Length: 378
Image (tube, rainbow, N blue to C red; front, side, top):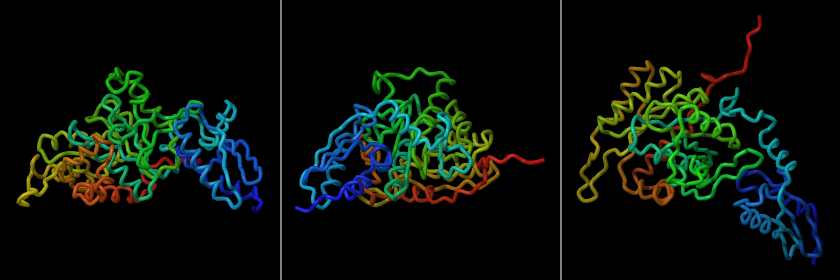
């Protein structure tokens, strides 16, 4: 039997990524020890917390990686838990030296695309659009996060199929992940579960959103989506204050009543000095499955009307990014936690959402509107 080279074992462990942090466990100080006895390798791993929901995944990844090393016949993985000092070191490593309560997305030079998905009223499918956009971006290789900023009416965990709560390391929240997208919501912080109401006034709403942005470890995101509550209330204003470089994406249906209200949500950008990236018309017309004739359940032209009125009101072009055809499977997939863009990417609604995701994730991010951290000299 060939002799096991310890360097080969260490190299194999360096390829094992923590499933939540997506960095090698060797860089995170998670490898406690490695013992080689003939063809047997015993690896001791530090978990961040005792109830780590990913311990089975970590065990499997370590077993597979070390088991592929030449000469290894058996792998034993032993799990331990980091002490307070080790967790503090891990937190410092992940934060990269920044201050604890900083919002990284508002820091000078941050290149993450931040989109606040808004609507004038509820029931237009804004959250479903947000989830499918995020999942489509992630499927294209983007690093994506979602903030469920609808503190009262949070729905992102259900639409994403997220069932495990986030892990907390020294006050730093590791967001849950599904379909390659990291997400944070009010739901896991409610002892009473989904039926427990959130009785927050304005200042508490602001604080909750601020914590989602500053206390959560997001990693290096390409795109961050905020699923805002409908309207122009506290959260819409707070998101503009906390993320001044965020662009608005207005979701409406073709119906005149929805479009008229949607214009108001977009016009908030005039007061918050934000950009409006564009308008998405959801629940648009679709061909009859029997005769092929177009069916317009919710009217025609709402999205174009919103884009036109916002362009005139804001004095700059606001495009209609696209129309998402009505499809019951978009709702059905949300109920199951299976976004349509993954379940049936060839469906017309899914194809439209994938195209929208490509448009938003490929937008160039210049320096206009960014804080550069410069002080004029006299």
